[in-house]
Image 1 (tube, one colour):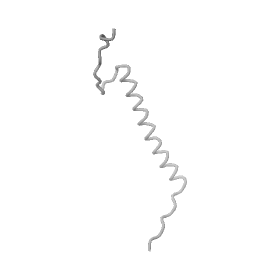
Image 2: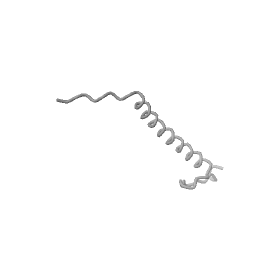
Image 3: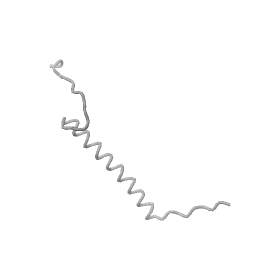
Image 4: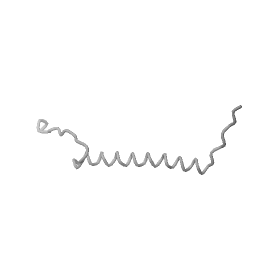
Length: 57
């Protein structure tokens, strides 16, 4: 017969939740940093084709 698992303590639950949140925070920070570097044109790892705006002038 199956036995129910023991309940996870609040501290373990909080630790796991904070780790999960921290991963999301760092992913968002990296994405924002990459977006800033692309928009300023200082990106060294991400290549974007530049379109010329001479036709619009």
